[in-house]
Image 1 (tube, rainbow over the protein chains, first blue to last red):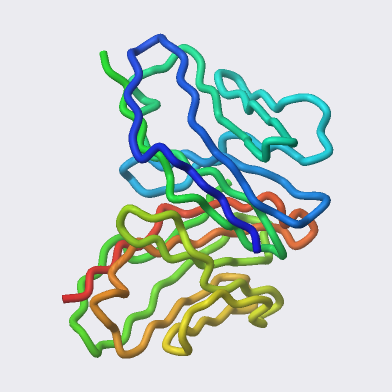
Image 2: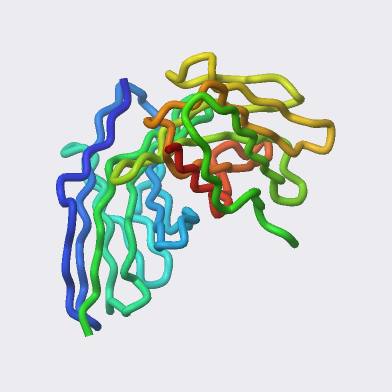
Length: 112
Length: 113
């Protein structure tokens, strides 16, 4: 069965610094996708970045990049130049048969 | 272009009652999924609707039921509420041919007393 593991319940980062949020996954599928979502206190899940298992390049979207290491089954999110507005919950997820499977999330707090 | 909308925003019920939550998908989307997010947890898949039929279901009891209307909007019904049903309920919509891309609504926060 698919499983997503996020081992960091909470992280702190100083404003303007970079931070890495860890995600490991377990899947028996040959082809799969990995997603990162941001959830502010308002509750809405905001899509950040996607990585396909056959993508040769690591995905990047503005200040977000995904450090994809297939052999290690890890898909860590890197946020560069952190901003106060980045304070939120972050979820790693995979999609299987139309449904998302989420990890337990990491709460990020950006310090001024 | 309106995104996914959900109503109500907040809801307080007592044990044993029944509740209906509503979701309107993003314009052009025909598929609606529902997720339950308990405090401190990631969202858990409840079920998905397409063409007014339940397409797939997660590990939730029959107390959880749903419906999709011809305009693609959807309802989630929960009967015989338990304290453990207190959670944020998220709706996500997508286009059937682009199932990898799901857009979430702001959620309905249900409190069961």
